[in-house]
Image 1 (cartoon, rainbow, N blue to C red):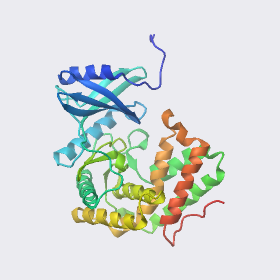
Image 2 (tube, rainbow, N blue to C red):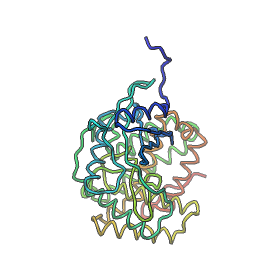
Image 3 (cartoon, rainbow, N blue to C red):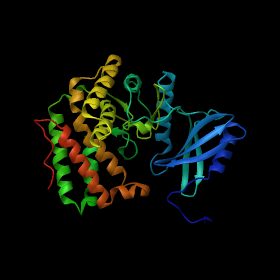
Image 4 (cartoon, rainbow, N blue to C red):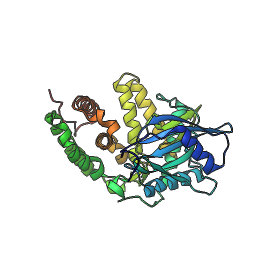
Length: 345
């Protein structure tokens, strides 16, 4: 019989993790500081003047096979000199550490530290570097087939219409009991995305492993040099999804007045020009970008229902505001002849 009360989630003690790293890596004077709670917990580790990031995964979100696939992807990118925060092996060569937590087995991986900081509004050099390195990442990921990939646990490793539109839409219905009009709008919007994609030759879209969350919070700039991190949602799908996530970030900046429409157009053109100089992307793939954003929103809103820390984001009031934002963005950026559905009054 357990000597402690069962838990669904626990925050691991920083000092105990410092001891774990010291034992597993053979390092002296290890310091560990809790940074942020997310789909995994993030800690800053320091030893001998060097900094690292320790990620402790939630067992409800990632199993060991899936974490191993993430490790394999990042090691392949590091070998190709793509700038990523990469896994660090312990003194036995192991990358994944098992931890017996109150809620059961959890896993941790130590990563190299991404120098610099997040930058929301990128300058021309940074836009070019982001485009260049995203293209290089896609060149590598398009040629990989990793264990624990498509079809593994809960389908989170594949980005397609089922996992980004139909599945999330169905599972989110109970959360719209106080906003049935908003849910009807989502149903209509999904239909329009499907209709638009049916006009395109999606069979010719490039596929590979996507990051699917290329927002500034997930890459650091040290001057004009970029480092990518947080591949927690990596999955196989159309590679243009990564272009879409960055495009979506900039449209939100325009919406909230942090960037002008002209500056957005210039920034996106600069980013795309450098990306396309390194790797081709078709006009049809780019035409799909505004419509693929609906799958981005639905995927992450549905994910917020799976972990208690995100429950405030799916409460009726917050959810209604979020859908209103999505409606406003789509009304502005979905061009004719497939306009976004009319906003409810």
